[in-house]
Structure formats: structure tokens, C-alpha cells
Length: 175
Image (cartoon, rainbow, N blue to C red; front, side, top):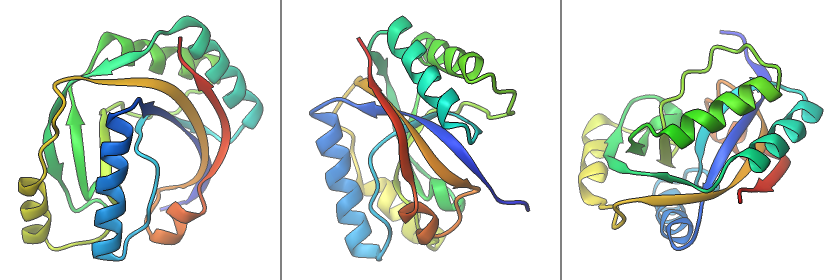
């Protein structure tokens, strides 16, 4: 599989959800010797063009209000970037931001929007992942997201060093 540098567009949760998720990410990273990262929902992944990223975030911030997502539960998989994650229901606000970013970045990538917020990036046994998923409860019925970030990263992200090399390309607050 070819690896390439891309821009990942993230929605960042507002407080108190941001601190709640960051604590879980930090705790799991410490327990399982895994990378620490900012809590986020990936909205789109596209070409590595910082100029397009800044323009796309600006347009999305101008046209979109704070996005609220409904958590559906904690899930797990054998995919490195979805070891343990919060699955969210799709929303009109999320679809709108995805469309604006895709259009403003002039990007025809085939990224499929499946809203989730990862809590751990680590290759773990299925039994361990299932135990972890069952042990976490999200105390929010709805989570607001109030900012966007464009992150330069390697795709696919497969190991800790890939995560630790992530680089912020642009950021904007939603209205």
C-alpha cells in the first residue's frame, strides 16, 4: 500500500468533553505505551496542500456553526487508527462541513465520512479491546465541537511514529 502525506481535517470537541476525552486518551496511552493525541473527529482527508487547507477551514468557519454530535457508544476494531473509539451518529452539520471542506480544498479524494473519535491507537488483542470498550461510558448525550484543525500526516497512519509526526497546518474556531 502506498503511503503519502495528506491533510486530515478535524473537528475538535468543546469543553468539558475535550478534557474528558483527553484524560481517557492520556490514561490509555500511559497504560498501553501508545501515542498521546488531541481528541478529534476526522471530517475529511485530502491532498497535502496547506494553502487549500487554510482556505477550506476559513470557508467552513465562516459558513458553519458549532456542530453537535450524538455518541452511539464505544466500539473497537483491529484497525490501528480505530483501536478503541466513540462512534457518533451522522448529522446534517457534519455533512455540511464535510461538503464545504471537500469543495473549498478542491479535493476529489474518496474519503468516506464515518464519524468517530479515537481513544487509543495500538494493536491489541480483541479480548483486551472488548474489555476496554465495555469499561468506558461517555457521560454526554450530545457533544459540541467548536473548532477545526487541518493536520499534515502520513496516510495510512500505521504506527506510533506516524501519530507523533502529525503537524498542525491550520486551525479555525466555528461561530
